[in-house]
Image (cartoon, rainbow, N blue to C red; front, side, top):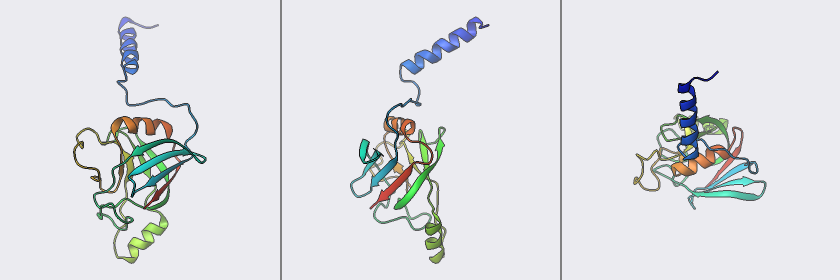
Length: 165
């Protein structure tokens, strides 16, 4: 059975969850079928079919105009990708991996004699990055930590993401 220490630990865990102490939320609404990012508008929409379920203001790479071409250019990619991984232990609170680079991205970078880069994510700010301006990432898409908790709960691996200029 349960000893006293186990019961106290379970009660503490329940209280923390009830007080919002966890970064992991549950979501039981409509499926997010696509993420649409408009870089120029600094907006990201979580979409079901043709209906936007939620919209967020975003930060981008430190050099936000134009598509990412090579590693270190500070740009956020443009094109059609998928969410290909989830990182609950991200340095940036929580993160969702974007399947950049595609085969096409690799070929275009290779034609320039360079590597395409990688590790592009949607992620939070991790508090330490507050006040760094709106475009501060190395090419990722950034939102507030509380928003990232919501996004992380709503978006599944395999979800399409379209990143537009």
